[in-house]
Length: 470
Ligand code: UDX
Image (cartoon, rainbow, N blue to C red; front, side):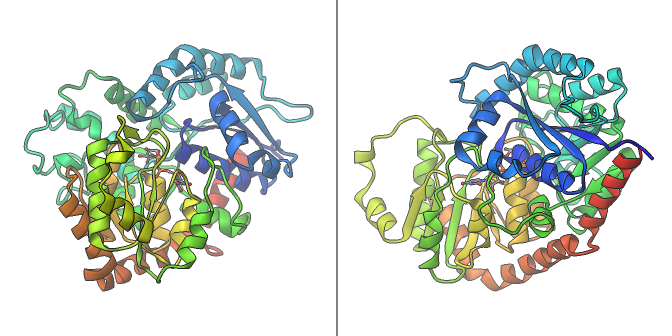
């Protein structure tokens, strides 16, 4: 019989990926697998400060946390455009330390077996070199959407065919070299870095490396369910035959680990009082607004959204993450009407328990930056989206939301109070019946995927069997 596997999970230090990896950690732990989670020092400290992670994990005797430096000073913002500094820090500091940790076997604790499987974020190309060097199988966990990953995997072909870069021109031209998407994916829907003037930039280089490394891994784990992404999975399997779709991972987690609502992997302190406020609102009347953990907006954009929300006449719950607005504004100059109407039917806060918010019956729509976790969380709760994508994969996700799954409206590349007002009215009122039907169908398919013997449960079991017999 093979020795018990010991899995090393190594998330990208961002809210969405950290949350997914911690849920995967627990799913593996309850199957008796030994797990080490390697977080950056910064993420580990922040998790301890704002969530109940350590208390929760103390009940597992087969789980350890290890930390590693991300190479950035403590006071670095690690968000917005400055998030990219992280890749420099990781290259110079994290990579060599990680290699040293793997070679020296520092992940063994007391009677733990040595690490036998590595599961890093799919953007960590260096981890594959290290895994090959030490002879340990590696499975990538891709925490962006499969549709975005598919565009990454096609990037060498897109560049070779001259479809990328396109220097920001003719954004409505259809893309030919992403199989399965030829009828609806336009230049403007490609990942944001494709809009840069040339391909000699940090993000394109990172993604090109990722496109080369992902097919070389032993397998690929995706946070999706098969029925949702079959359009692209059918093509992706030709490059990466061993794919495990274990999503929506937060729902799989609720079905297999715990249904408790107090579970949090948040990097900010959650304001749960918004749930009591939601209790006072009418069913499907509130629009929830959040741009996730990284995206930012200018002061002008903030005011366009604010006017649009107020002018729609609908109640709104708005997360304004600390540091998410670029630049300062004088609070005394905010028009009195905005203040008064927000007091009447708005709730603005810095961070909320999003899964619980989206599950609340008062929520009728989600104005989102289209990060993959927010998207799949909204899909599973049957909440239609208004998509305002900013970075990397978000442009692709929003196109799939509006054109493939038809569960929302894509307002990318605009930021105008009239457009926001109309989109909110459409989702909450005018197109309500249409969206209730389309979101319900998709949510049901998602629910079936994590039910007993559902495809995501089967894929998790298949994955556990694979790593146990390797
Ligand atoms: C990043 C990228 O920006 C995104 O494009 C990519 O798809 C995944 O990694 P992020 O910007 O954080 O993620 O967005 P998203 O993927 O939507 O994840 C945000 C997470 O934070 C979600 O799980 C959401 O539930 C949580 N969240 C957000 C809260 O718990 N509370 C909040 O107030 C806001």
